[in-house]
Length: 413
Image (tube, rainbow, N blue to C red; front, side, top):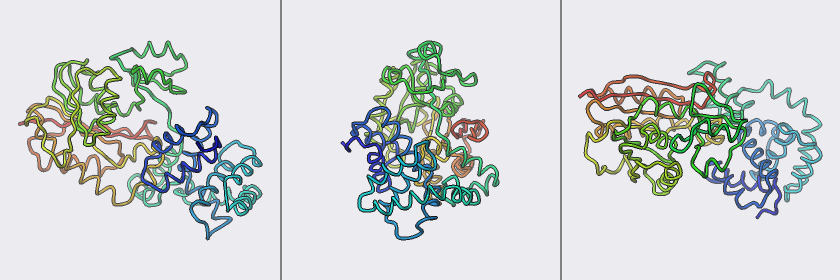
């Protein structure tokens, strides 16, 4: 345990995330499991952990105002945590300074001085922030903002940054294999139904009993679009080519009414275990799990096996930065071309297993044309036996949901 000190707990989690390649969600989950903190302090750690990551450039701008050089990373992390409390949270200044200085170790004197000066000069610093570039004010890598600026224009790029910096709403999908949305509403009247997405509810907090019993799955409504476009039918043979952790596979089984055959694949054993656990919890009875790396292995099933295939491809996740706070800091300019090449290889590896007359949906949670329309265009250019039937896209700043893309292909011969 970390002495049940929430600020120290948050600092350790931030240092662990910064030092490695772990996802922020995994770091926080593991940290809280071993923290021994109560509910209020766990909430504090969650807010500050995600808040510091989300506002990293903003916080560094404030720190730079008082100390432009000579900061090691551990001291900078302490200062980010302190400045976040002073500039972004409703915590009394004296408490934020006192508690943060107490975890600063050898840098206590420096941290104390900078935090106190940041209080005195707060209005001045905030005025300077108003004049700072958009990517500083809303804490995005400059290359990513410039990319969006070129593609969508300055105003839309700024709107996207603003959207990404707001806490994500909590949505659940009612699992009709076990319950109806109406029955969930009866047990949590403050949940908000979504008329345009009948299976989804927005909830003020996540009822753990719903998740454990499999009556609901945490899922943004945008993730259902690809499955609805594929429209699998009861009795069909369906492939989910990149299935873990299982949200879309569970919904495919629901659309199939647990009839027919659903083959759910993923490349890694641990991911496959998580997929299997989730589908079992959801009551999916028509699925077969299969470990399969589409880039390096040949499936055991013959060509032309499936009536319908979902390829929910790995991507840069730029449509879900609001929900996956740390994505922006893991991306590099080279990732977009690298992911496109990977997506094309996976999609071309899967195409032979679709029946003539069958349907395939290619989907991502990216908002980048390179990973969406351009992938489909390049694959179709070398696959004349397939045709593009429809495309769908969810744009966060327009639809107020996670970004998503889906393209429906049919095999004509």
